[in-house]
Image (tube, rainbow, N blue to C red; front, side):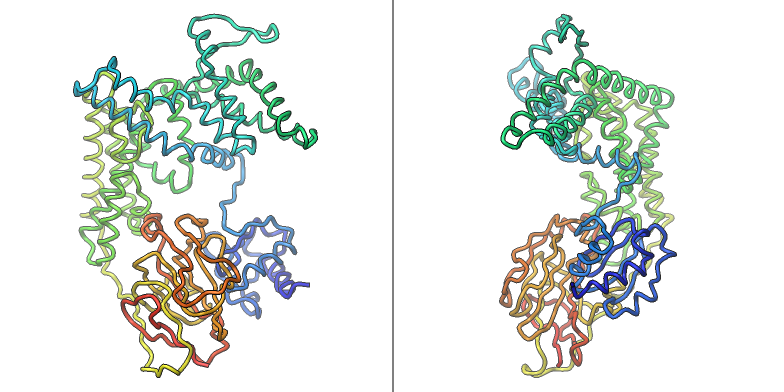
Length: 616
């Protein structure tokens, strides 16, 4: 029996029993429960348990802090409760609406980058034509337009791949189904107005180029067909009989029923949006300008992405993108005002980089790092976005392709007829959104003077032979553990140590020893020195939610390391831009085994310079 079995049973009992648990995950130090009713839990009793360091309740999570042994405790908790395993925190999707949002995000996320690039190229061509540098009958234009338009024309093929992956089907079968929808011979028949039958059943010929909904529904059906035949076909022939049956069933079914029904639904969706937009273009775009960032925060913006693409395919234009542009520059204006008013150099630095990122459409650093924590500036950014949306609605601004974010979306707002006031509405709206949010924030928001970060008090000078040295695992500035905005670390519950504000993205071994735990998300690593000192290095706060993105591990569990070996590399700038605090706690997790743990350095430190002494 596992040594953690009794602890796991006690944890489950004191969180209200397994029936009270929605889900459980773990990060570097703690079990993270989502409970049906937190009132049924008994955190005070759990805190007194020998195997539990403390309990933290925040953000809808019930967090049981275990320490370095959390992976082993987690395994026994999952086994005892019969819970689904997961080593990283994931968003729990419940209800039809949340599952729909999850499906849409999974399908469209992989193609948004190439789609934005193609849209930008189309915008560039529109600019060159408007300036008279190219004409549409020139060979240069034809070649570049093929490059720009290929993704949109063959969108069913590309969506067939990503949708099939999301639904658990064969991505290449999804691509083949999409290819059938835009097969040249069938496209030619549809263009010529000819008729087609399949087994004497009439086929409704429609244009599926640039379509969205038909291929998504078709690949969903295909995934079910594949599952059916995979379970009932011998493995010796499964690899080719299942694809054959899927294509044999789904392609005709798509032409006969799925495609026409989905196309009519697509047209109805586009016409419905056009009707609402026609009632008041100003209100429609102003609403998106005001609330887009709120939708992004809750992940609900994915519900509008297929509507944008569908509008472009059916109507040839979209106005939601205009509101997104205004929402972006609303936050940029508020961020600029905070930056100018700030007296804290760190706030000024973050504000400058966040403003630049916002211009190019990346607003997360500005929102999570500056405007949202201060509340009023975020609201002023929403007001600025709405004001810009009013301008865009008044001047009839629209997008004619899927472009990039921020200023990169402007080129796709050039109409085929050339530069006119509808296009200039985008530029004027951007300025209005920025100026309004900047003005409101600058006048009405009072920037609080920064509080001084606690400093580390160095220990008295110690002889080289006194205590076990622990070297700095990262390059940066040493600060007190109390400066960490996570009470599990700052309270010393995990053990004594320091924190470092890193200036480069490399984690080095602080001594000769062994890798005890390298987490799947690669944001934290546990080590044990040859003398028995156990150290946790935790890069950033809540960076487990990045699920390994921006991190790369260079060691594995059980590996021997020498002081100075590279353990983990990480993209410091990308993590900060994603809105995460990069402060890195360095904790001696078995502090209780020693007389004391003393900091030995203040200020800027280089890797492998002593920062702690562990006294036996």
